[in-house]
Length: 378
Figure 1 (cartoon, helix red, strand yellow):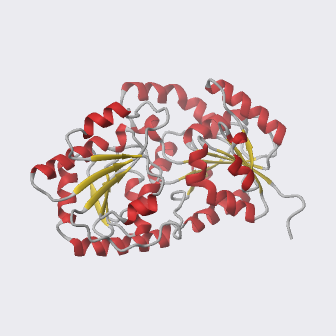
Figure 2 (cartoon, rainbow, N blue to C red):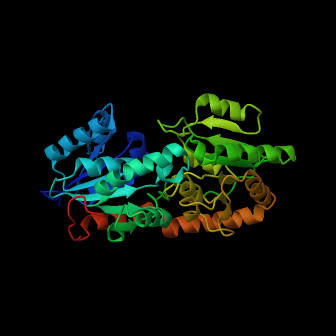
Figure 3 (tube, helix red, strand yellow):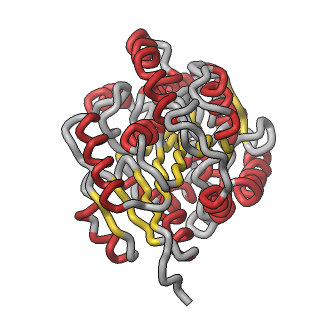
């Protein structure tokens, strides 16, 4: 029997596409636990799919960050959710400031990677970190914080932006093992090497392209594809022109945005993801693992969470096209090892990254008792 007075859960996300791809399972799991689920982001109120799922959408669009904070604060006062769960560092920051002084709300913020702000060494990123750190500490101070990898958690604790007592490790947003079933590797005449990614420079797309050129020059018989659409506004985004320039020599082929990832992964022989971005745990790697593919990625926070070196894939140094090419060549020349790694990938996905396990941990956190901190305390 449904609860006559369900608790209201407000999920605050950066984009509705991201809600559907990454957080729909959590919303549905919460709904099954009798939460009244609301979602807030730009254009959420116009999304008919939310209504079809018996969710409620709220717009928090504005022309600048101050406007978003004020709009969200007004929404929180009006809706008075029992639990607010903001996802991504940006929206945790915005929500934390918007909720200052508001009582009787459990605050859960998922820092799904620290991104450009903390993992880019450029002068602009360093200045932004210095300016934003005190405000970030204020915003995150009175919340339960979910980190997706231990490196990110250790970094913010070390910088005294967050308190260890408030931090929880839930690795990834999970992968739906039914949506991404195990599929034996196809017997392609020319093996297909795929990089699935958002088009952001720090994802290592140029490294993948250079590795493909190295292998093509050696006469390696393989196809190298990049799957990903133009990224939302990001200081590090790659433009369509830049992608066309990088791929015009034919060493790699850019597929654009691919909506049917299960089918794409099923037809792939090897996944390569040479990222040095501030990842949480990349969902594309979990989808590849669930499908049963060997993976080559970087020994970098977030990425290494999805790969056990020499078990379900290979870890390579960041920004090293030659090492990436060597790893690709090694696995292309050894289909038996690729098959073993593929089985190990599926086993890892089932054991550690099943979306049902991730959702269960998250829902438990909503109910975890927490000692109150001073508003904005760090």
